Image (cartoon, rainbow, N blue to C red; front, side, top):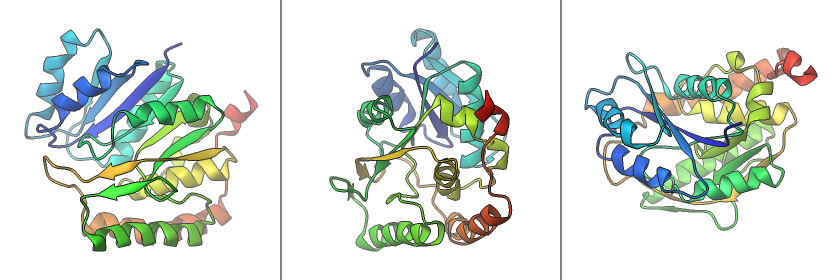
Length: 249
């Protein structure tokens, strides 16, 4: 059985992707990498493919046509990872806002009993660097709002730096995950919590990107704000996010 995979979705990340790949491949213990690229017009996929021959079969790419959204990129990556029997499946951004060294701490938390570990800005020891104060407040109170609506005991509900155990992703019914933007991160944590898996927050320092262009938009924020209310309402009507067949296996 393979051990650790990190899924990195990309769209126009030519400034960052080569260095990110090299940094992750140099980690010990070892991580394999899956890039899910949404037809980046800047040539990101070509950079990735040029590095595959020297990666010792540890670097992989799935190319999709068009910008299909963060959530569907991760779902595609999860399915790819499960087909290949990875035990720990991580997700992170390509822009170094997540420190690749922290992947080791996320996996360690799962090895010690967590079903899902979250790189958290808002637990003791967590921090944010290079963000303007208004964006920090917006992000923090967004997480407070999500906790209030969903009753989740997770302080950084919008975090996108996560490690899942294979058992979690096998158990969840990924077809019921609806959101494609950053609300996807909230919905996944909600699904994990509803299925009564253990979530552990690991403090990290989030550093705003230096190279490339942010993908954040008002539409993404609106999806997260309104989507949480819809998600909570649906959970009362159809509370099961998990695959009953997997639970019985």
